[in-house]
Each structure stands twice: as structure tokens, then as C-alpha cells.
Amino acid sequence: MIATLPSSLLAAIPVAIAAGFVSFVSPCVLPLLPGYLGFLSGSLGTVSVRRPGRTVLGAMAFILGFTLVFVSYGALFGELGNTLKTDQRTISIIFGVVTIVMGMLFAGWLPSAWLLRERRVHFLPSATVFGALLLGFFFGVGWSPCIGPTLAAVVGLASSSSGASAARGSTLAFFYCVGLGIPFIVFALFGEWATGTSKWLRRHQHTLAVVGGIMLIVVGVLEVTGLWAHFVIYLQDHLQVSLPL
Image (cartoon, rainbow, N blue to C red; front, side, top):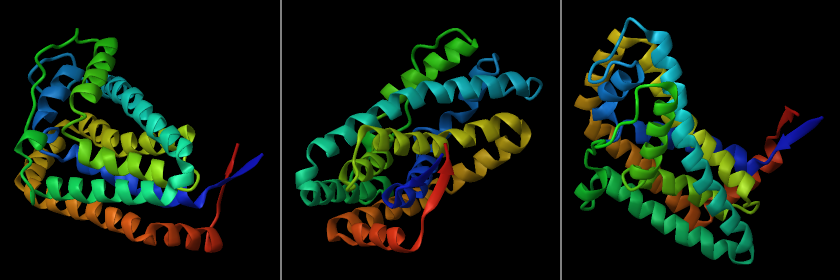
């Protein structure tokens, strides 16, 4: 059986993936990368390059943990959009304004020290695969305020689209987790290279934050002006992607 991917979802998926990556390079996630990888490898405080298989397995469990949290958020807001679908234009404007404000916060153009500051884990579960899953869950719950700007853009797109639903919201949240989670796996696979890349990303963190903030602002403006809906209609008329089910 072949299913056609809805144009609104097709347009939003790249944004969700990009938003996830922007969250990864944010000041409250990237600085903690060595500690995360050290925990996931079973060697707290250091990045293990001798056991990449265990580190990758731990990283996948960690990603699963925060994916459960964020997909739940996406489903909740997607269902909210479905419930209020008669006021779709109003919802689009509200979420667009929120996304613009979040983008300005992320770019550092509004006071945001409380939002984007580096956070620390004060409780660590045992250094096992299940412990990594728990750590991912705690990350999803505890770091939500910090990565809120990018996550808000994703759930906003899920809630304000014409086909808003819990399934669509959870799908976009899943792809957000893909963008956030893939760098963890890449860094877990390539320990020495990851160390140098992490330093480069930290040196250019401000620039990356500004670029990410501008991306969110653009998405918000498209929602407020209604241009996002026109873009979705354009895709619907000119492009369809079919998936085998």
C-alpha cells in the first residue's frame, strides 16, 4: 500500500530536523557533550574511544529517552491544534508570534541568560543502557526550558497546520529528535574527531545561535503572514511524496 505524505508535513520535516540540530549546538547542550559521552561509554567524566560500540548503544538509549518526552509534547500540541482547528488562522498567528520571540531569545537579541544557560545533571542513574535511557528521559524533562525556542517552533508547526493531529505532532517531534540525536551518535562513533569538532562548534556557538534564531524568526514570520500556508499549497500542487506502507 502506498501512502502520500501530506504537503504540510513534507514542508515541516526539514524545519524540525534543523531545529533539532540547532538545539544540539545550543549553550546548554553542547558544553555537556563530553560528560554525556563519558557516561554513555560507562566511563564517567571522560569520552571513551576504546568502546565505541557501547557508547553508540548508550547514545541510542539516551536518544530514545528524550524522544519519548518530546514526541509526547508533539502529540499533545498536535491534538490541541486539531481540537481548535476552526480557529486555525488565529492559532497560526499566535504560534508564529511565539516562534518569533523564541527566535530572538535564541539569537541573543532578548535577555535569555535564564533560558540558554548551561545546566548540570545533579543526579546520574547507573552507567548502563537502561541508565542511559533514564538520563535521556531526565534530559527531555529538565532541559525543555532551555531548548524550548526550537521545540516551540516545531510544535507550533504541528498545531497550526490545516491537518493538525496528535499523529502529525508526534511525527514532527520525532524528526526534531532525529536532528538532535544524530549528532550524539556521530560523536559517539568518532571520539577523537568529535573532540576537535566540539571545540570548533563551541568557538562558533554565538554565530550558530544567531543563525538558528534567524531560522526560527523566518518560520514565525511565515506563519504570522500566512505565507507558510501558501507554501504548503504550492507543494501540494507541485510535489507529492509517496511512501510504501
